[in-house]
Structures are given as C-alpha cells and as structure tokens.
Image 1 (tube, rainbow, N blue to C red):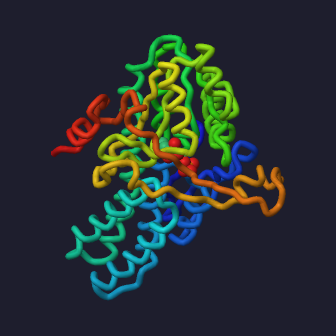
Image 2 (tube, rainbow, N blue to C red; image 1 turned 45 degrees about the vertical axis):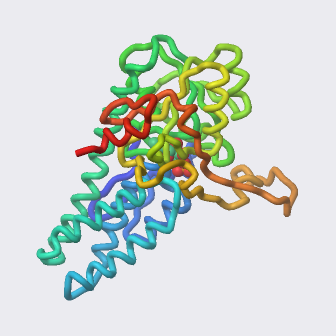
Length: 346
Ligand code: MRU
C-alpha cells in the first residue's frame, strides 16, 4: 500500500489524519491513550477494523503509563483506560472486541511482572494490526470469486485500506478482483455527511490506479435502473446473529435499491465485526454525531443557522436485502443465523 493507516513505532502510535485527506497527507503521533481516544472520537482514524487496531494500541499505550505495585491495582487502572477508549464510538463492535482481547491478555499473564505484561500487551496490539491485514486479503480472495468479469461495482463509505490495517474489506474484494484482471470499475458514493466516499475511497482507489467514478448519494438508484451497476459491495460495523448489518448511514437505501433492481448486494467484513450476542439489528447501538457535520461542509455553512438536525452515523440493513456476507473464513448466504454461527464454532 502507498500509505499506512496506523502503526506502532518506538512506543508511539502513528496514524494518517483522515480528517485532512485528500487535501493533505499528514501523519500524527500519539504518546498517550487519551490522545488515541480523541483520535477515534474525532475520526482521525475511522472504519471498524482500524478503530479496533487503534483501540488495542491505545490500551497498550495506557498500560505503559500505569504505576502499580500489584497486578490487581494495574488491572483496575487498565480497566479505566479501556473504559475511556470504549466510550469513543458505540457502533463498530471491533472497538469492544479489541479491548476485550487486550484485557484477556493481561488476565492470562497476571502472574508475570508488570514490565512483561506491558510488553505482551504491546505485542498483542501489533498482532491485531498484522492479522487484520492478512484477514483483509482473505476476504478479498473469497469475495473476488463472486465478482463477474467487467463488472461496475458500487461501494458506499470507505471500507478500504484506510478503514483497516490495509487493503480493506469491501475495497479488499474490489482490489482482489482488480488484481485478478477482471476489468472491474468502481462507482463510489460520496457518502454524506462526512464524505468518506469522496474524500477517502476515491483517493485510495486513484492512488492504486483502480478505475473509480464518484457520484453523489442520490444518483445510485438511477444508475442501477439504467443498468450501469452490476453489484454492490460494502463493509460493516456490526453484524447481528440474524445477518442484519450496521454500516454507514445510507447503506440501507443502497441495499433496498439494489434489491428493487435485482443487483447482488454483498457485505464484506472480518469475523471480529460479528456480534452474535445480538439477535437482530434492532439491538445495535447507533451513534448520533454532531449536527455541524450536516449543517456545514468542511467548515462552510450550507444550512440556516439554528435549523434542527438529525445525524445518525449508521443504519441497519435487514438481512433479507443482503445477497451474501463475505468473511475471511468463507461466504455465508441464505440462513445467516446458522451460517454465521458455523463460522465461529470451534
Ligand atoms: O464513521 P466511519 O467512517 O467510521 O464509518 C465507517 C463505515 O461505516 C465502514 O463502512 C465500516 O466501518 C467498514 S470498514 C472496513
């Protein structure tokens, strides 16, 4: 990849600042967990798997700051660190998955001295990042098999290298299909209000010379009706046991339009995005973000001052609109309840 989303270097966390792309390619350095928590909340780093990696690295940084005589005192303080990081963004389950994984490492090694535990936490955070890249490549390989030669693929938001440790989930499928020489083209929804599609997806696909055309969100239906789109591939922030999928606001509209136009609608996501403790999408917490994201674009007001605003950052696409869910362990179709459970069965 020609950029690095997030990296642990010299006991610091380095992230590309996604709030400033594509105008500027700036890397920020974080030395404490509070900074990492702010970076997640402020969307310097965003996208479910990347948020998971950032959370793990934040916990590892936090562990370095803790002063304690006993494991119990260390662990109590580590739980506080986890709580601060866990309060940043509620929808992407990867954040909580990563935090729990970090806590388990500390607990498992409670007999060791604190410097050793800190080192193990650092190693775990780096492992989460390394694994994520490999997982994205597997998702890409599994998904590319579903893509027909010469397809134009619509994607929403950014589920690319910027949303993961690299390569991407939805964009991983697209990258793998492109690398396999399938002659694909991409339509990127701009993805109001935060413009992940325009600012990030278009940027990273152009960097890799993958043909991409940008549209505003309200154009997708018309292009589908005109036969200009052969399938849709999107990422996910949380997938419930029945296959209902939370992803960036606007995904639901794309899925309904795809069904109406008989176009396959694929969700690509790692196993860490599954939340099988939730029966259905109705139980997925949906983040509401500041109204200024809707009333202004890049700081320029586009609405009358004081107007009432709604800004849910995600929506839930019911499983009946999803043709298949693509994971690193395989592709699930039809009975999601059984298929997803089978993926995680030991
Ligand atoms: O608010 P964001 O930018 O974090 O939302 C990101 C998305 O909705 C992505 O599609 C999702 O996290 C999948 S990323 C591989």
